[in-house]
Structure formats: C-alpha cells, structure tokens
Length: 95
Image (cartoon, rainbow, N blue to C red; front, side, top):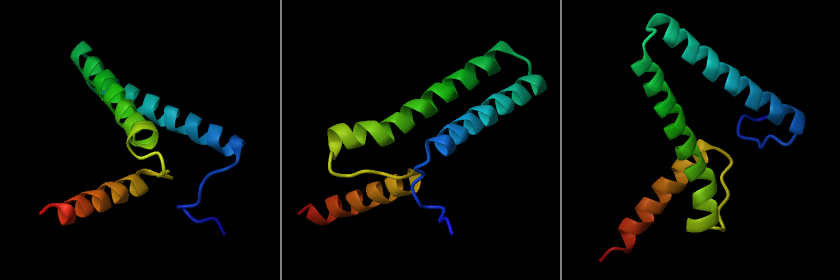
C-alpha cells in the first residue's frame, strides 16, 4: 500500500506528476481568461504563477541550501511543520 506522505521515487511518475500539474495550471488559466478575457487578468495570473514558483523554490531550495542544510522536506506539510516547530523553539529560547 502506498502512503500519501511517502516519497515519490519513480522518475516516470515524477515526470507524470509534473506534466499533470502543468496541465492543471494551463487549463485553469485558460478557463479564467475565457471567463474574463482582459490583459490585466492575464498579468495578474502571470504574477501569481511567478510568485508561487518563487515561494516553492524558497521552501525547498533556499531553506535546505542556505538556512538549514541538515533538514530536507518531502512536501509543503513538512515545511509548514518545520516552520511551526522552529518558531516555537525560537519563542522558548527568548528570555
């Protein structure tokens, strides 16, 4: 049985997952632009996409390589748990 929190190790399934996520993004953006075909909405969608990609990069690359090299995340839930544990640890260390 495969657990939802288990790491994905098959390169075939990793590529499939990436393709499906890209497909979901493109279809979602297309549906929004069909509903509201305006340039400002397109610009906001592109900014949203850029910011989401940068935050994901921050969560999985910057933290692991520059802030805490000993910690490796397997998903956004692990990253959130890491942040919550870190903030509670910092509060307990303050005099």
